[in-house]
Image (cartoon, rainbow, N blue to C red; front, side, top):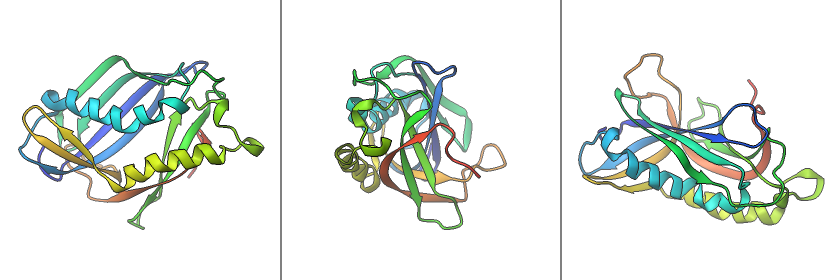
Length: 204
């Protein structure tokens, strides 16, 4: 990858009671790098930084039955370059009862390019510990999560690699119709306040 290339991260989870793995997708733009690199070599460093940034801070609000079992890195402009990790890569740490598997800990991603739709992230496995009045997320839980997501909005993902240092900025992208090219329509991201969503709550 070179400066301004785009990367997709796809993660899969085993979720108690779910018939299929839960899947999340994150898109990034490489906004700075000291040298070109390939994901096949720097993948482990990106994996560890990504999990430390997006999942370790959420361990206390995600059921300990939820396990990340696969992580895939792919470069949009270099389809022959990638990295895949399998195994028990991360696990939630909350022993309270998990909400039904279709329920998610969700965040709206506000786009700053108004030719696009807003995005959404849906983390599997929230627990009853975060429930507030009316079945909504509690104010205390939402406030605590807002501290985390403010960092995600304001600060890019910094990766100290083996042969290079990298800065990845999160994006909402419109997927190119041609393989092997970077997205040309994309937006920066602002994370919204947490709520309980469902795996299929985004329509249209």
